[in-house]
Image (cartoon, rainbow, N blue to C red):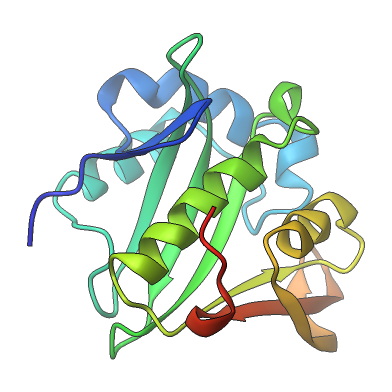
Length: 182
């Protein structure tokens, strides 16, 4: 297996996180508008550095492993977000997630980045199924999943303790045979 470097879209690179990404990573992950929908309550340089350093030793698409891809805007070479991708133990299914800096939301960039990752997962890595989970109030995230052709499979009521209260989750998924390459 070759060492993963990057995926390219018209406006983005989906790539490994590097040392130079730390400031941008911390800036958007520590933004209250971003943290509102994420599992973390705070984000700082210590957490960011630990993640970047850990991922240097990891290859994405490894069975029972996870990877956080950086999303770089080609026009500025700026890190604008990251994508989470966790493989199951068999290496045939995965869960994905996405985080984008607020100033880059609403421009189709999350959809573009995730589309590239899904296309690679299904066409090159031969995954069977990919799921994504969101808060049912996170309309922007749900719209990304729908634009990608994912369908809602479940709505779990008060199934997760989230930021001091019970919260719902919605689960979206897509199968390899349902995927339409761009």
